[in-house]
Image (tube, rainbow, N blue to C red; front, side, top):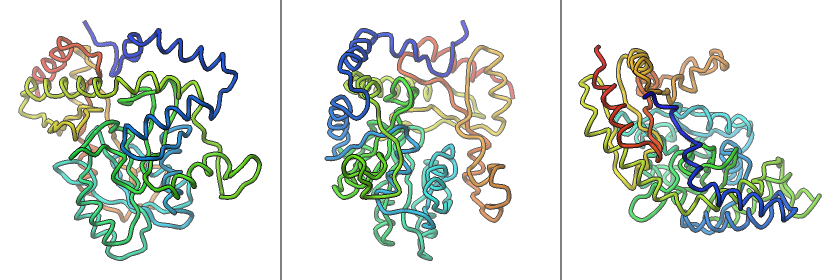
Length: 367
C-alpha cells in the first residue's frame, strides 16, 4: 500500500486529540488570545527544556531568526555569516534586518557549517554575527564553532528549527549560542497547529531586547523604547497546543532515531550514501540520503508509492531572485549536496513495515 505522505500529521495529533481539544477550549474560555498565561507557561517550560533561563515566543521560525539576530546586535548593513544549504530561512531573516549575508561552505562529512571555512570567512573582519544551522536534526560542532566565533569577537545565533531536543555532553540545542531560534511549524520534531516560533537565550539583555522587538519595541503599552520593532507574537492557542506536546518530544525523537537506524541497516544500495545517526546529537528530523541521480531515485520511489522530497534543491546564493548578486560566491560542497540530497519519510508514526517498504524500494532501484 502506498504511503500517504512524507508526514502524517493526522496520525501524529490523533493520540493527543483529547488533550489538544481541551487546551484549545481552555484558551477560548479564557477570553485572552495573545501573550497570556499559556504563552508564559510554555516559554518557561521550553526554556527549562533547553537549559536556558529565557524564552520569548514569536510568530514563526523565520521571525525567531530575525529577532534573535537583532537581539545580539545585528542590524542594517551588518554582515552575517551563514550556510547556503538550509532552505533560505536564514537568508530571509538576514535580508529582513537589512543585513548582508556572507555565505560559508559546509563540511562534506556533516553537511553543517565548517569551522575551518568559518575561520577563513571571519579572518578579514567585518562580520558581526553567525547563524549556525543544526540541519536535518544533527547538532553542529558547537565547541569548534564557538571557539572560532569567540576568537573573532562574533556573536552566535543557533538555528534550531530542525533540532528540537538534540544534545551533546548534556547540553541541548539552543543552549550554546548567544541566542537561538526555533520553529514550531507543524512538521517539526515539536510542531504547533500552525505557525509558531521562539527565541531562547541565557543573556538577560538579549531576552529583554527580543521581548520588546517582538511587539513594536514596546517596554510598556504604546511606548516604543527599542526599535525598529515588529508584530510577531506567539498566540495562546499555539502555546497551549505546544504545552500538550512538549512532554512527548523526547519519545518522538527516540522513535525518529529508531526509524533512521532501521534505514541505515536495511538500505544497502551501492549508489545511495546514508547519513550517520549519532543520538542524542542527531534527532532525525529528516532522513536524507545522497545519490548522483537524485531525480532518477525520486521517480523510481514515486512509481513504487513512496514519497520523497528534496531539502534543499537550490543553494541560497544561486536563487534566481538574486540575479547575479552572488555570482562570485563559490561553495563547492554546498552546491554538490544541493544537487544530490533526497529525503525519505521519517516521522514518529511511521511503522516498521512502512519503513521496510521504503528501504526495499530504494534497494530495488536499477541505476
